[in-house]
Image (cartoon, rainbow, N blue to C red; front, side, top):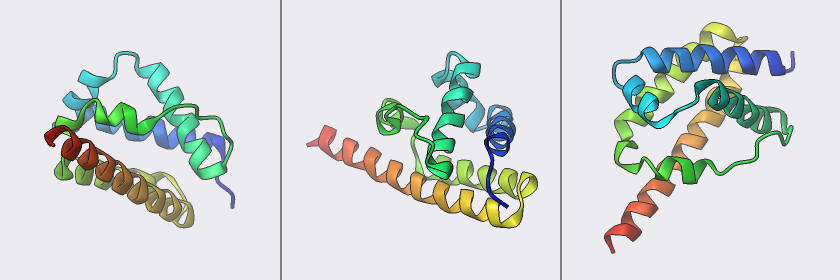
Length: 124
């Protein structure tokens, strides 16, 4: 069964609700995001572009994450990924959940490498 925009919206909404409730991630995200409804729309467009190749997302996720590089730790990425896995497992069919998790793993790895590159250049 193909992934739908409705599934993406449901996953993003549920996941970021949990992120906001998380004792570690919640304060980080709440401190970084001023307009949650707008941010959720952006994230839905991002995941639509990633999973459905819709081209809806127009942004630079690396720039957004580098701005908060001091909070971009391995532990926080791992916590984010664990919450993503749990939420996608609960809301999606197993095959769809696995696809979302694989993409999230790659995105997290890419963001971590980008943040480390930024730190290394800043330190040089």
